[in-house]
Amino acid sequence: MKQIGDIVVFQRHPAVEEAFQTAAERRIDGECRQRVANHYSDPSGQFHAGIWRGGPGRWRVKYSEHEFCTLLEGRVRISDAAGDSVELSPGDHFVIPAGFEGVWQVLEPACKTYAVFEPRAV
Image (cartoon, rainbow, N blue to C red):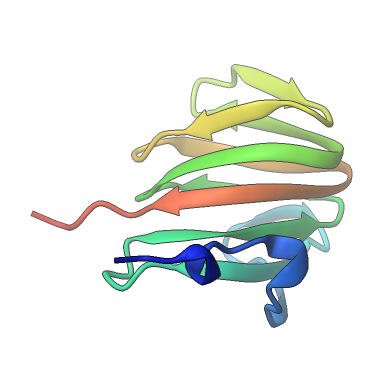
């Protein structure tokens, strides 16, 4: 049985922040610098939650996972393969479903919380 100590409060749970740059073959423009602090991963390795930060840039994405996000700072635009897009601002909650392919663009330095579920391959 889980106890109160198993609850992960991000501000109280230390997480190592990892900095990286989007792979060159996926970059469209900009530096595409990102940082992620993963605060929780379940024992199966299918569920993860944490905080992501990104600087200006555009890059191609292909989601194998389902991702729920809340944008805390900045502005981003997500476009699909047909060129339709949605612009997101602080306070927006959104889900990117597994199978989505398109372009992620950071318009203003951004910060989001995320919860990712990676389905098992069948």
